[in-house]
Length: 217
Ligand SMILES: Cc1cc2nc3c(=O)[nH]c(=O)nc-3n(C[C@H](O)[C@H](O)[C@H](O)COP(=O)(O)O)c2cc1C
Image (cartoon, rainbow, N blue to C red):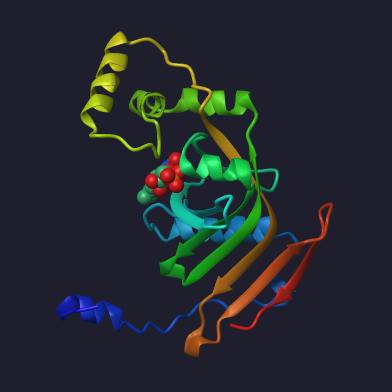
């Protein structure tokens, strides 16, 4: 890359990480407990969008892709987000329900990697969430054929204006709703000095049992 000035500086950044060490004896047996502690820590830093997570999916011909979505709930040990079921990610999850999620919280030098299986939420749960969204977000969810190729945004804007002008409550369209990712593996990464980072992986063993193991940095 032909870079100068601030770009070059950014590429040459070398940050020495530091954080409270992950000590096995202090770790909960359930990774969801640790996730909730770490999420609360991330919120407490005041960073923007600590609930933004990267979602990776895989196409039927094994090509991965990823994008950011927002975590909306953690319920019964599963991670919930909402989207268009006919979007690229929706189609990929239909073929292959296995997905990965990633959180990176720079102020804490922490990363959490989650791997699991996606399931659509029950219609009533998606209905309730849809009803709680601001009108503008509801309208956009109804109007946008997410991930389809379009000529420009004007036609969509016009449909939004028309729908909003009707001032009628909108119900959730069948092509929009939530997924839960049910994890089978969660890795917690805590940056440490000299690149000797802590990595603890929890692997689901069935029922409520998780095996905990340390990985080399
Ligand atoms: C901060 C942030 C939050 C986002 N949250 C969502 C979300 O919760 N749901 C969603 O469908 N797209 C969300 N997006 C947009 C997605 O990244 C993506 O553009 C869209 O879902 C289409 O992805 P796809 O074509 O791979 O299906 C968000 C993007 C950003 C940058």
